[in-house]
Length: 366
Image (cartoon, rainbow, N blue to C red):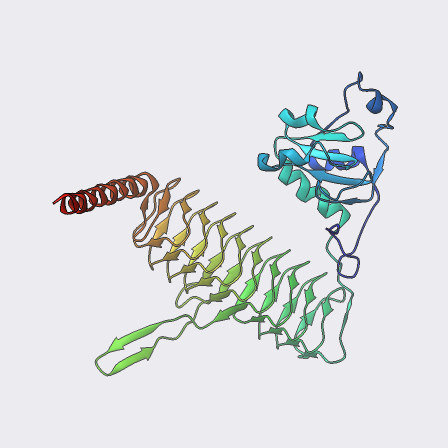
């Protein structure tokens, strides 16, 4: 097993001092027990430096590793890592020769420390010779426009942005500072905040699925809204977000949307919500802050999902979900009711098998 951060693909930074890494993560460094001879001989001054991060199985003395899931606690004793990020109750189980970086949230600390060693690649200012940039577009001098990208008239590309190859930024689209738009993305009728990341193949701002139904067929309804995307949003590969019909489709700050998600017109998603792969949200549904929608869930239109609600995988949501509730199943219902039904059906199935088997036994005896 190789270590993370193949230098062909990732830009490395560092080395970093142990004390600086702990401060970055808001963690405390705990050293091995003084009665441990091997630990006593190890150099654990705060200026000790590290060069990378790695899993417990492959980490070496200059690597920082972490343990968050207790299922992998057995790997801790044998790790060769120079420092391990752990919860407080695992600090005394970090092996001799390693420092414990102690925090209640090891995975969060791992994310921050990993980013210190592997920061995002900065924009390489300039416009590629094959890119097509309309004279009426505004492109900051520090932005990077990749090969065969197209920037439409009146579009605005902010400082430090990266526009990937074959990406199309439509007329009037505004993209905030330090945003990363990867390859083959198409964006129209949209206003993006700062530090937005859109992964390859995503389509933003196309017509919503809006029709008036007549006796002779469907009449398309003009989609006159926009897509408004807040700061720090991530949108996964091949995800589609329709623009609004008469109002805007709104994606709040710090929303994370996985790959292959469909978001219909006029949908509003609150700050810090997470939507997992292959979920679909129908038009005009309003989702509160910090909502979690699991993979392949489907939400009908014109619903309200309250703040911090949780929607289980493959759920079919056909009614409003109160704040803080967990809904499961199709049609979706509160988790407790769902599991009660599962238990009841299981009992009925077991009872039915017993009846069938009893009849078979009596037939055999006769």
